[in-house]
Image 1 (tube, rainbow, N blue to C red):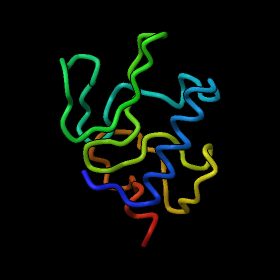
Image 2: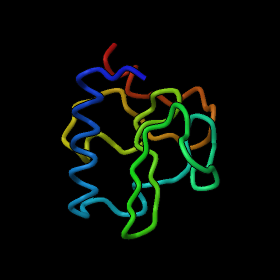
Image 3: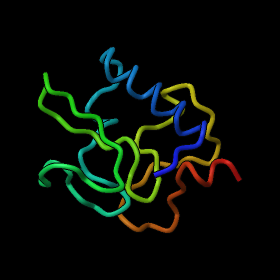
Image 4: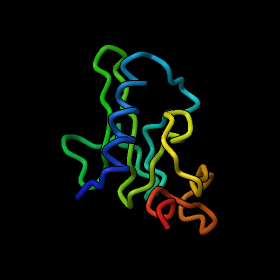
Length: 103
């Protein structure tokens, strides 16, 4: 997966917020919104997903889904993504991910 500068900024700010404990359970999920895979149920490397593993809390959070969707609201991270919308169900055509925010 090749990361552009916007995604790199998003990831940096997401990891910083996660490390500082500024995000809560409502904003975090172990389920990929692109493919509905619960990554906690898969052993080892999970192709195409960018994850945050918190060993202390024994949790896994999907940061970027397998199709490139940013799972944490970028506005909470002070990242401009005007077209970002939360995903409510898998394969919902009304959902817009980070790639769409640049258009």
